[in-house]
Image 1: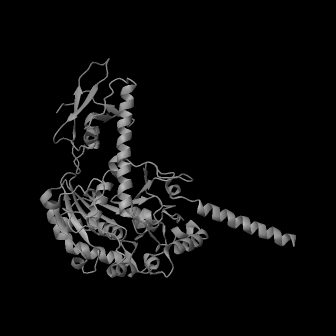
Image 2 (image 1 turned 60 degrees about the vertical axis):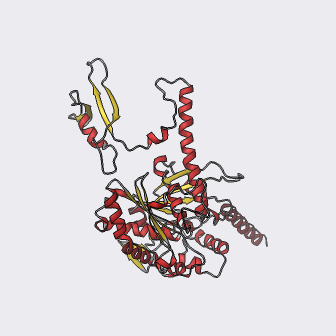
Image 3 (image 1 turned 135 degrees about the vertical axis):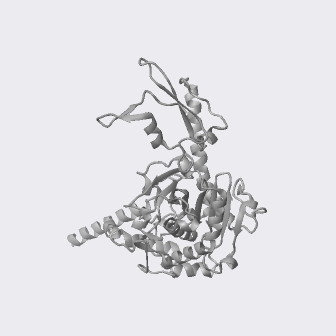
Length: 437
């Protein structure tokens, strides 16, 4: 009898420990070891979210549900704004917009419409291991939609890019269902760049907002340089390994299904998950917006963490009341904008602090600081001659055409070759006679 009671206590303790760990697991744990994102990398996310939100509007000039501050888009620069009648159920509606201020050509695809039967057909057109592509596995229905969309709009995108010039970047963006289509469309584009006028790979970018699991792990890591996934805290979709067609075709309510998936995955080791080539993952580099903490009430100033994870790639379902609300594009746009504003404020506060401490040569913050820091104007290097007893002074001034790479920024590799020689040991040594241009 005592043995049975002891076993019962062990089982109860084990179950209690499991329940405690699962119920107290918060989304911020997935990225707690990741470094913070660079502000320049994440600055585009809020305006990309606004472009996706604009797809939901009938008329951008007279919006019904504008985000805070408006869409900040010129309706005259929208080349195409489609509806479900235009896409004929092949993919969700989308728009094509030319951002002349940031030099981007944006194709934005909306997310799942719960009342549109055609969206469910795209989701349900798949089964595990059905579609191989580029050495991996992808979601068949999403790949089919991406192929249709590229065939339809390739000429438009090519003409816009050739007309605007090579310094413009092509941005493919989508939310939820649209994120999977955007990610797979991007893979096709970078492998067939001749269809878009030979656009360089470095000028192609995809933003998958609240991404769906649409490609195997090898493809998700392979294209991390061009695909960026943005996830808000506890969002359920990137974490749910259950195929999309099972999630939305289930007879169970979504919270119940997430709980069952959570219990099942507890007993599956991660090594076994990684060895399954058919298992689908969220694509590309991850940007995780974290704005809530364990046992803390309310929302905190968001921080953005980034990495290209292999193990622990959002494998834990978070049992949270925010799991579905964090999937909304409206909330993602708000928190992304807060994160960008927070990063800019930190920079301004640091500049003010360094001036208050009377640090030599400290420059006070100005209204143009943020603009100047993101300016693509290349640098001109001026070498001031000096005697052997004093150091050589190197100044950086604005220039118009020197040392440019394909993105319009300074080519530092060429600059190093001009300024330095290598000695016999392979170390860099500053040249004494440097021609001044």
